[in-house]
Image (tube, rainbow, N blue to C red; front, side):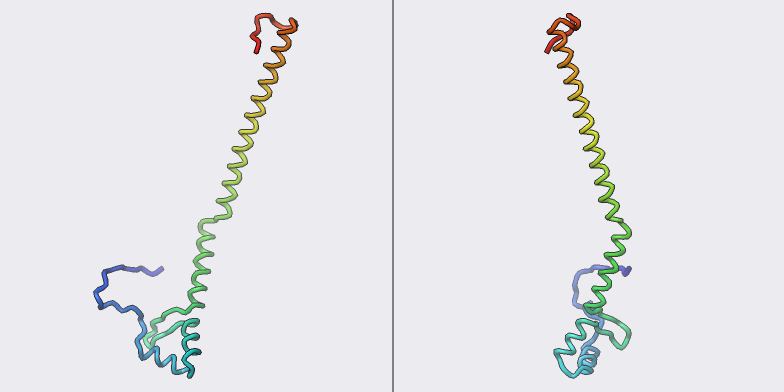
Length: 127
């Protein structure tokens, strides 16, 4: 991974590593300006000193590679699976709690009905 250093623009920085002569030589090789520009945009430009400005194809390939590396590194599929499991555990716990409270309420109701009919303990509280 290249290291980039950002500094204030002072006019001495070289924006493109390709000089005008290199660019004109590569464009002249195609004969037609529109074909040459399309080719340079897709394939990039290389100087006689080996410096390179990548074309669209190289940039797309690099982006695909970076995306694949990021997906492999962070395993996003597994993160979502883990979240889904945790949500299912929470929902299950909540359902169990609701069922337990409903059962307790049914038991209280049943015991209060028994107390009202006189069949149960007379000291049991009624609802």
